[in-house]
Structures are given as structure tokens and as C-alpha cells.
Image (tube, rainbow, N blue to C red; front, side, top):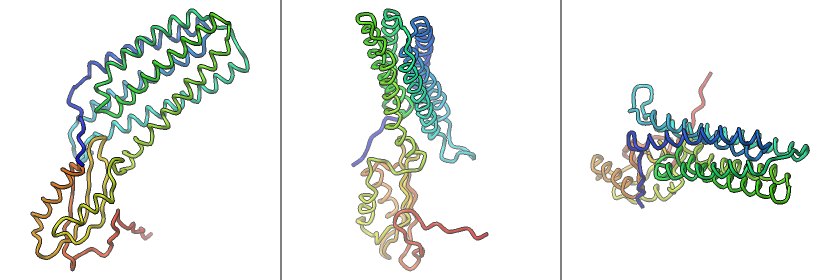
Length: 306
């Protein structure tokens, strides 16, 4: 089955990302001030999350710019993978923030402090509006960029966090339940850590040259070996060059009657149409010239003699 993807177009949506960054930075400042005045840890926790989102958007914005650069002598595959690197940085930062918030929330349980509920509700209400606005700005872009998608999901998480903070402030006003504030902080931190742990493996898969999760490599091998003229395949490498670009290289053993040029073209067309492989490199071999190492997936590693 072919897989269609939306690719990043040059300069597409840059102004929206820049505006989203400005909104999140302004929100972070307002929440930190409100949290200090109100004595609310949960409000400061939400501010730190918003700050991490702003930083994530800045990194994603820069990565989008770099990713558009064409391949050159230093980066022969191009610069697309910089977006995966940026995403890894963003999620790593989120994990650090999440653990810090857990630490602060536990300390607040041990040493409770008074919080001003109405300030929490007011500032968190503003935060909720800005979170939703930022999510709206990045929604369409999130379909084509792993960085922007992460930022979009973060803003939805922020919106949920703002709802939780509003609830905490309301309970403080109505019932004087100050313990709800650190509890809300624990929930926000837990969500941050859960979200990061869920998304990071996808980024690592790209950086580790993993095969696309939607493709079954055995299905690809079967399709190749069922191609008329093909006897067997080996040394297959299937990997993601970037979030949307799949590549394959392989050694193909063909029978004597097959035309190597026509067979190569047939296989390339099949890989593109059926599996969405945009870049394929094929080495065609006759049975008598087949290389001795015939590992089907990958190749045998040779130790370096000292």
C-alpha cells in the first residue's frame, strides 16, 4: 500500500510559528509573575511547561529553516534529519522539567504554603485562551513536521494543565484546599513525562536509521522476491532518511534471462508505488557472481584487525 505524506514547503507557516512563540513567551512571563504573587506552585509549573513549549517552537522553527538546505559535500543526504535532532532535544528538556516539577511538588506537600486562589484562576484562564490559540496556529503545520506536531501536542497538554490549575484555584477559593495545588503540579508533571516517554521512541527510531513503523520488512522482501526475474535478495537496508522519506538498498540476484536495466526500473517503480519508498539503490548480481555474505537483512560486520 502506498503511503502519502504532506511535506514541508519552503517558508510555509513560518509567521504562524513565530507568532505562536511570541504568545507562549508572553504567557510564560505572566504565569510566573502570577504564580509568585499568588504563591502557587501549580501556576509556576504550568509556566515552566509553557516556557518549554516556547523553546520547543524556537528550536523547531530553526530546524525547519536548516532542513530546507540542499544536500552538499558535508551532508550528502541533506539536512532533513535536523528536525529529529531538534525533537530529541525538546523531549529531553521536557523530561528534565517533569522530574523537577515532581521534586518541587513533593517538597510542597512536606512544607505546605498558602496560595491565593483568585489570582490562579485569572492567570490560568488567560493561559487557557493562549494555549488554544497556539494550538490552532500550529494544527495544520503539525501534520507535516515532527517538531511542530510535538509543539501542538504540548499546547493541548498545556490547555489541559490550565484547566487543572483553574480547578485547583477554584477549590482553594471555595474550600481552602491548598493541598490541591501541589497535587495538580504532580498531575501536570506526570502528563509531561508520559507524553515525552511516548513520543521520544519515534524520534530515536529516525536517528537510529530504523525502518518505518508502518512498513513490514518481510512484506517488502516477499514482494521483491516475487518480482519476475528475481531469484533472491540480500543485504537489505530499509530506513527513514527523515520523517517522510523512506530509503532502501539491496543486492538483487537475478536469472540470466532478465534484463538488468529493465528489472531495476521495475523494482524501483514497485517500491515507490506499493511501499512509498522514494529512494532506492539496487545492486544486481548474477548467481555465479553473488557475494559470499548473503545475510538477508543488513550485512555481516567485519572486525578490524589491530
